Image (cartoon, rainbow, N blue to C red; front, side):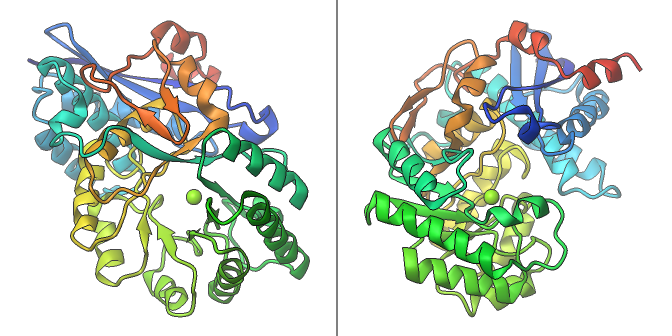
Length: 392
Ligand code: MG
């Protein structure tokens, strides 16, 4: 079997959060065609600020390295792409491009062999994938609003919920400067978490995403307060991702469990986190860190340290499916993330809807990823900037 074509499609999904929130947030889908008529698909989405246009163009750039290759040689092709841009930097942009290709190759292999991707990864260790809920708090500003939204989410069957309660820091989400929060902002955020804990009771796991907003003393103070007041399950990305020394500094002073990993790329960047015992949970992102191949390897690395993984999801349905197939096969799984406000958007690009069931996702036994793209829906939702770039 030979690869005959590689294509990228950058679409504008309806996140259900409003245009002002999601401007410049697109999803990048990838298709790989073969001389035997099979097509595999993957995802290489990246946000914010037109990150998906960048990865879409990256997919276009690697097309000539793939056409003519045997798509079943996934490991070989992963390494070919990984080493190809060593002078650009093999992690980050390059690993995001690899992710989209890798996921499509696994989908293709499953279709060629007539079995689901999870069977190719060693087979399932569980019947369905446990999930946790993000994006249930859109529009909440006051503690009672967070509490009501959390209560409604739990009523849908969820027993683990994640949010970032520190609204003052939203403008700094990709604009870190001094890593500090005002006393009023700290109080408001901690009060929101306390209101949620009071509303949902002790049986629901509350995960707090710090989005890498803080410096060391601020992260330590917030994490300890949230743990002591509201018994949070994890404090995610307390610091920007660049310094493991700083993370160790937080680790040595904080009582809350730490989760990191959505901005760590490939197994190589997870090794020091495991070796130096810097986190309790790892959250690799399957469309950023290197695809299904890399997520499985990171999970196995973590397994040998008895550290659970919890694949990160903030993009589209390919990310959900790819992460779910790996999650089916990983003993050391905590939960797979998903955004409950994106469920309609996920399904809008698929031929059949994802099978959510309360706090789990069911995968079924169809070959490959198990669900194919709705190409008509994709062509109807192409990003106008992407369409212009295709003509250049
Ligand atoms: Mg996060």
